[in-house]
Amino acid sequence: MNSTIKKHVLENGLTILTKEIHHAPIISHWSWFRVGSRNEVVGKTGISHWVEHMQFKGTPKYPIHVLDAEISKVGGYWNAMTYLDWTTYYETLPSDNAEIAFDLEADRMINSVFDKKETELERTVVISEREGNENEPMFKLGEAIRVAAFEKHPYAQEVIGEMKDLRTISRDDLYTHYQEYYSPGNAVIAVAGDFKTEELIENLTNKYQQIENKDTTLHIIQPEDDIKTKKEVTVEGPGDTVYIQVSYRAPKAADEDFFSLMVVDSLLTGPSSFSMFGGGNISNKTSRLYQKLVETDLSVGISGGLQATIDPYLYDILAVTSPEKNAQLVIKAIDEEIDRIQNKSISQPEIDRAIKQAKALFAYGSESITNQAFWMGYSSMFADHTWFDAYISNLEKVTMERMVSAAQKYLDPNHRVVGIYRPTQKENF
Image (cartoon, rainbow, N blue to C red; front, side, top):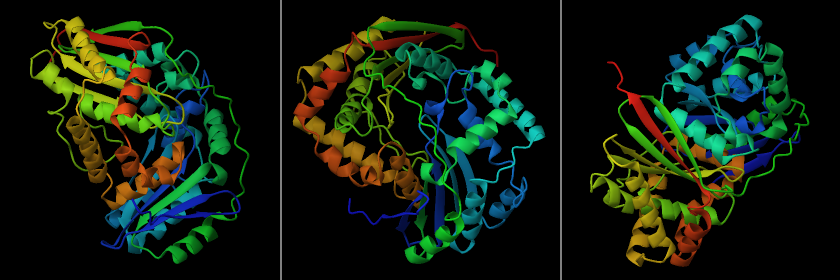
């Protein structure tokens, strides 16, 4: 991909990424901060996500609900997300009204109020969110697998946090976390759409250059490169469906093996999308595990998941089946297909198709202005924007040898977590 992304760094450390796209009078503006559940400690889990919620509670300049009304009035939309390595806020709106977004984000980088009453109201919201998640089989299974897969790394923690922490985190804890991580040197502004770069940079410089950079506390986080042994976890709960998840340690996104494992994933379960906003869909019916499991009625669904992260995380294979089916036969079938790849039972046309499908899904998921802005900032959280630029070329570099090597290195049956969610009763409707 030939990059048209421009990078500008202010004296206070703020990185600004811009990409002019003039086919529609729209701008998408994203503020990214390098803080997520990875940066949390025991007793304060979920604090990054809670701070994200508090950023919508207003500043002295923009009281609560004022901006929501302003953005809605011009036909725009805004939201935010917190994940393992990052927190981000975005607005997509008509380019003539983009000043609203620029001014708001510069203001709430340092001036959010964190009102005590609003803090307690939001405590109820995040606790309710956690309670809702606990009713979801995949959340319960995923949480158990994370705990088994990570002995020390904070990736073991759910982004929403532990219930006991959500009950005890204080307003001052939240404000301290905000002051520590919301700083120009820890942030990336990504803007795509209908603007002139020089004018935009001048505008953003005027808004941000007076904000003092703070030294973000660097917690020493040791990556966990291996799941030391084969582990099994069983979770029970309401429902009428069995979920089988097989999780392996995956390489970090900046590792050269990452794209090789992406192609393995595409071959096994169909390509995975990193886009948060969809943008097309690729059928996985040609994938090996769909044919092995779904077409033989062992499973009703199969999917894979590979996440782009700072440190090695997890590659997951998820099968959905009924209680009447033998879960061990499903796991055995998964192992057989992985073993075939590890032993080079794979054709070049299969590899070409897997790469083509992964490329197509990326193209579909990066075509909108909102997704273009998303990708610039997103890739900067675990690598830099050139990771996005080189996405297609890195997929095209994957060979059979690299695929086989990645499958042998990462998909080791003796170093993984196998999790099964078994329903104990049918849900009442």
